[in-house]
Length: 279
Ligand code: SIN
Image (cartoon, rainbow, N blue to C red; front, side):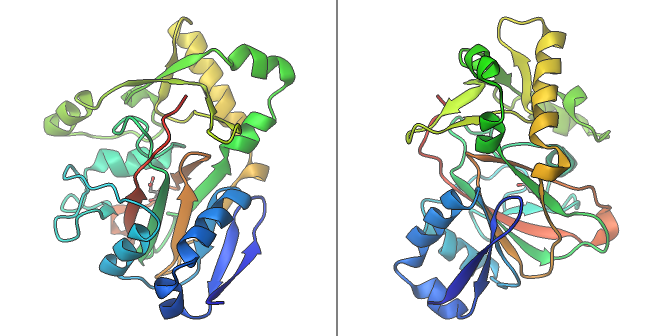
């Protein structure tokens, strides 16, 4: 066995890789790791795995098709790699600081959310910049029976609304125009997955409940995020160079903690194409 898995608390697991070459070559590891994601609350942490960009891409492709885009943040040198760095040469400030609020990747930019994301630490921040995760299946499970019934038919608009973000941003007119062109998607509040499990579809892009006054809907969505992200339910990852974290983007939410542009934080993210519409 090229690796061993130890559960983390309150969710996730740590994957200690004893033989990286064997892991990367193993025909069974991709399926085993996707299964491990499911049974360990949707997050796998690989301390100091040390993959470079082409190897990270190759590893991801063994698990599924990779999302490739060319907009802000997407690497030209390594198609499929997206940079998370507070550096105008790497990404737009909005997409980096916007990830400091709880979210699901691709909830606005992609109609079908990516199945999973693989985030690798190229250079670690001198301060701040941890990444946090919560399990949105568990958040659904903790609702009361009455709430489950009441929320079952609710639909929510996901779009970028700057006043929903907790970090003030000083955006250029080009950035603002780009954000205005981001699509809006109407998703059910409760995602009933193919296997019958249910999760909440919430986060900073969930801005309006169809049919409710805007302020009332926003207050409900905020209270659901607050309940889902109580500190006792949060896995906090402090990065070291070379760490890789894989998360199930359909059953978790995540956020980065703030960091300064000169902290040196530089992360490479690869996303696996989603194959399960939110329904
Ligand atoms: C992301 O939101 O996908 C990136 C999170 C991070 O930079 O920690």
